[in-house]
Amino acid sequence: MRTARISGTILVAFVLVVTACPAVAPGSEVAGHTVRPVWAQVFSPDPYESVEGDDGPENARPITSLLAAAGGDYTEAHTLDRADSAPPFESDEDWSWFTVPESVDGSYSTYLFEAIPAGEPVVYPVIEVYGPVDSTLPAPHDPLTQSAPALDPASAATGLGDAWFDHLGTSVVFRPEASGAYFIRVRPYGDDSGDGYEARAGEYTFRAKSGSVVRLAGADRYATAVAISRERYADGMLDGALEFDNYATVLVASGENYPDALAGSFLAGVANAPILLTRSLSLPAVTAEELRRLAPDNVVVLGGTGAVADAVIDEIEALFPATAVPAVTRSAGTDRIETAIRIAADGAELHATRAGESLPRGCIIANARNFPDALSASAASAGGLLPIMLTDADALDPRVEAAIEQMQMTDAIIVGGTGVVSSAVESRLKQLLGSTRVIRLAGDDRYETSSVFASWLVGLPNGVAQIGTPGNPVLMPAGRMFQVAVATGQNFPDALAAGPSCGRGDNVPAAPLLLTPPTLTSPWILDPMGVHEGEGYFESVELMLGEDPLIGKSYVFGGSGAVSDTTWRELDEYSGGR
Image 1 (tube, one colour):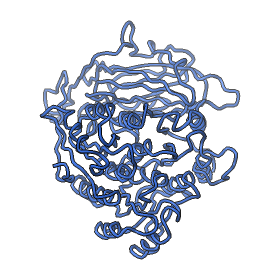
Image 2 (cartoon, one colour):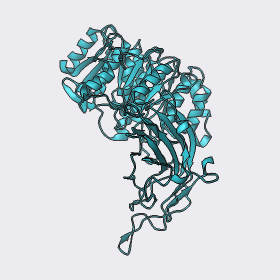
Image 3 (cartoon, rainbow, N blue to C red):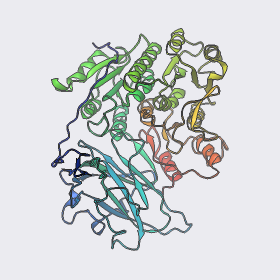
């Protein structure tokens, strides 16, 4: 059944084992009172629990020397070994502290602290930052108990959740206003309100750095796609940590060519799925291991046998025990243009099954033979649920025209100039949809185009909440203006996997994906020399705000050969890192 399309509803069940369970059902009434469940879960402690442990501010670990400077990061493995709603509320807490040095100009470095769940059962962490205090003792505030497991109003900064993660990972971008000692507490977050304790014990990765930009990269394009997937999903958590809403799907596409994975951004947004890359004739070992880790119920191979051979499907199926083999299907046509149409149709079908609601009815039109301009659109495709339709430059492919009519499209966004998608294509689209329902987003080169597209995506120049075409300015929600991603514009693989991560889908606004040359920072992103005065992405944000923007958690995708360490450092420093 390798040519079968996505159809039907796939149900997933998870079993969570805990060490103590409520004696009565949560929410039931005893003597007129709602019974709060007694709930606890334990896990193997991490090495930091040895000797005195790190469970309170008096035993907080010093990490000042570990904090990575701008253009770097520091990570370490941790475990929250107990989550507990039973008195005396002995949930594990991991404490650390760092020093913010004196400032000669009154400004202080921006810091990023993260707790990224790594395994199953998944931990649901909260991060709280306290300070400044004069010394490591006494505790920065009192009391610190688990009897009221809510976000602590005494904290200077708090993090619970993050738009980049599907596994309840937590980020704090902290901008201190004074020097001194600061404490960081990571703990399970729970709801002790009577509806049940939602925290989990488990493993997580602690990340600490100066600046708010993180690099995700692997040894090659296949490993980079895996690094992006690992950041977003914990082990076996494609279905989400607490909400089973995406039917555990992974998309697999050729890493040797771009069109199928590019079009797959839309399907990834619908399914809330990662895109992993493969060689056309064999499955890379790193991709195979990631498939095992994710344990999907469905694998959708994008493209025909010329892009991904049947032998790769055989390898995928052989990765799993007989009782856990995912349903492996193809979404493919006779060529790249028809494959993009097929992916659009499959995504629309899955969305109707899964969400029971209509799509925005807009599409992105891109050149089928050229990748740079279309890469910028992949995040919007995933986040805004806009299928990417590929066409030749000189005329609108009749199959695309038929698909637009069949899918009842009302709006089209052309990405790239007339040398990439001709004025004849634009004219035909206006005949089909109306002159105000077509917009072209383009610059003189791929880097300017990515900046123009990003500015449209986030609602610039005026910061509007909805975006679209002149005739339909509320086609989709605007993207995340202060969280961006950067990838090389010289090659396609890193951006193919990055697009779905930037545009998570599932009603989470997309983050813009900006392209840069591999050896320097595009002046259309950062323009310290004023080459494009008032026109680059961040300058446009500054003009709208009337001040420098506070850049949130952002990413550089790919290794230093794709995006230079200088660019990473410059972006980090722009975010406030030192």
